[in-house]
Every structure is written in C-alpha cells, then in structure tokens.
Length: 236
Image (cartoon, rainbow, N blue to C red; front, side, top):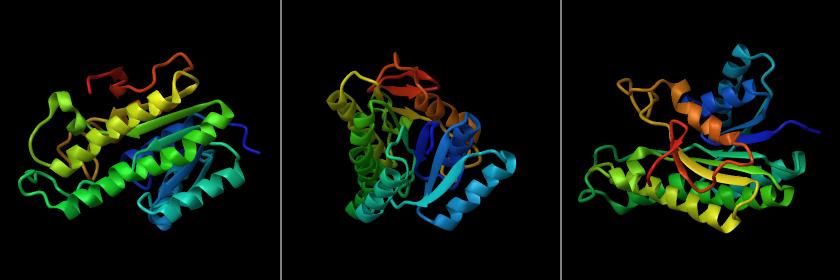
C-alpha cells in the first residue's frame, strides 16, 4: 500500500513533464509518469532514477485522445492505489505555429483540441470524482500565456484556442466541485526552452516546471479556479 501522495503526470517523457516528475519525486511523492510511447516514458524514468536513485516512479502508457487509454489508466489507478492525490495535465501539441486564423483548417484545430482540451477533460472527468470520494485532490492544467484573453495575440490560432478553452474548463470544474480540499487550477509555465518552445526561449525547463509543481502541493487554504504564472494569480 502506498502511503505517500500519488501524482499522475501526462506528457511526461521529456521537457517540462519529465522535470515535473523529477521534482515531485524529489519531494517524496509517488509518481505515475505517463507517455503515449511507453518506451520513451521508461527512458525518462531511467534518467530521473539515474539522478535520484530513490525516486519512486512507475511508468504507464497513456494516449489522452483515446477513450480506451484513459479508461485503462483509470482502472490501473483504482486497482493499484484506490486513490489519486495529484493530476497534472501537462501533455499538449502545437502544430500550427504562426498560422493565421484565416489559414487555419478544421482538421488542425480538431487535432489540437483533441490533445489539449478533450484529453484533460477526459482525465478530469475520470479522476476528480475519485478525489472527491477521498476528500483530497490537486489538479493542475498546464496552459499557456498564448491562451490568455487579456493578452491575446495573432497567429498560432489552434493552439491559442485550445489553451483558452482549457482555462475555461479549469474554471468550470472548480466551480462545480466547490470550495473544499480539492484545488483545480491552471498555469502558464512561460516560454521554456523545450522542443516546443525552442532554444531561444527565456526560461529553463526547471523554471518552467516550478509553478506546476508548486500548484500540485498547495495547502488547504489555497485558492481554486485560478490562472497562475510564476506562483502568482494572473488575469484570464
């Protein structure tokens, strides 16, 4: 029986997701590292274990756009642990970089929404009721400043739309769950030097992982249904 907190992180085979897993493991949390490609997920786990021999990490395949895959990991968590304390929806795609909304095709938007919105929706629907049954939970949806309506820009329309929608999903779940010991928030990690962000980005990967990890461990008195950057609430 696992007595420490249990966290599930999506899109965790590289970049910010891998760093989130490493940081949580360093804090004594049992981490379920998920990846569409289980071999890539295991490679990420091995990198973490090489740096942290005591890291408590298991790897599980997860494709968030697949109903069957989400159901399989839900059954795994139920049967193995009976609870989930932390859900971090980190996995996302960006396939329309700098594309004008006038040139955006529906298949590109649909594929982006499948990964960046419908995937987190499926996981929240699967695991928040489990958190409610156990009286504790922290949900972190990794969004982007590109989805911030108060600072909206041009281009990359599908990605922007998906992240704005993810922010809305976060707020709606938080309102429906209410003010208890389940905190549902979203954050922007900033512009990070990952495969997605590129080498010119201003933040390192550990800097990008900092706020998601902080939100995963919020105290009982912390807010819910908010949008964060650098550990501070920002405008939607």
